[in-house]
Length: 577
Image (cartoon, rainbow, N blue to C red; front, side, top):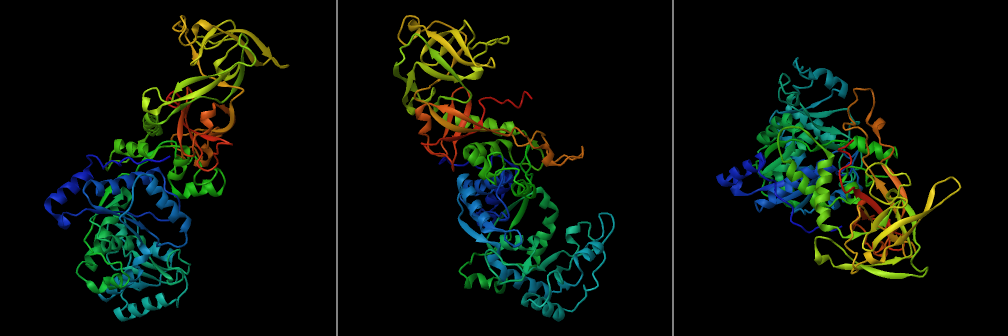
């Protein structure tokens, strides 16, 4: 499914107001440069889409630029598979980057900055292990205690740090820590770690390094060396902003050319800036989990069919499900950007999907649960074609010829031998209109040995056919059909929400999110399509009339073996539940 529409800007959010004021004041020369910095340790999900729309949308609105930066400072969890998937997802969502970088591109700069902090007496090498560091850190109500190694001399710290880089020490034996304030009310400022020792092969730098910077250290420096003006983060980083600012203030990258010399040598030079971090609330939806750890567990434990399982909230998953990127952008634009955490109903996103598909999806006829209908007053060899519009609201979609014959497939739920109250479809002795054909009356039934109806016999009123005097005769029900002789068999996957609980993360009842998995979230049926339905191309969405919106699976579909995924029903069925 392609999408060439222009993605929206960030709306009238508080962030946009900040950027408008900065541009008007001439801050950063009036430039706007943003970045989207995912860690390549998993696939992007719908929550990331909110950040993507904000980062790229703001830059686009103000004729700025956006960097796609892979935050690859933790080689234990990162993989090239995720790097390529992230790039594909960003482009699919309708955006493209002006600069593609990795945090690891700046490892030499980070190292030089660390040595500068040591020489300033603002960083030291610490021999405490992780458990000891936690014990020394203190609590929210009690101050921490200084490390016994905090007062090492500058030369000793430089020597030890260089030996850390040279690989002389075991993993976890030493860290480089900032020297800030162990009594700070903000625990993030209690001498945080800047570097740790990890002997792991890195997906971008190989085995060139055995020490790796911590995110809170690499993040502000990466922003600065890329010339970022506005660094948008989610609310959990609000308490980290003082550390972000501390790193930038101590190192002053825009004026210290010695720190950025490796960028010039590597051809990566951009004039550094003093970026501003601004926080906003995450994008949360009900009936989903957004934790990468939990999504990874769903995949590794084979509770789903991979990262792109259409039930997953990953962008790869919703793409395969058939959600149009325009609907996702529209959803986050309507949700807005605030500082208030909230949970949005998944049905709101599905509503956006329906809006986009109602206008964009051609119509086809399909039967998912077939029941044979025989029109007895037509000749056994009767065959004709009927012209149907491809879209009832847009003549530009054109029309198609649908074959019609004596034997048809109809939906089993469109017939009831003993009808419930208010049933307006086909019943014994009753009439119903066959879409585009005319009115039929049920005259007989054929049942199997168990008493189940397997065939419905009808007669067609010829006076109700198109152009005939009785064509406008009213009956209460209209049903769709597919010619049994011409129908194409297809696999149709009926997807529903992955969880039965609105908040799968709520463990107050002693259950984990996995206990709320919906056993009915995937159902596979053999359906029958009109011939034009089988010719749908991969990732093209269609409306199967009266049934919902469906998409030709991007991996498994072929005209000779059609495979469709249900995107959404025509109406919100979960609201009633």
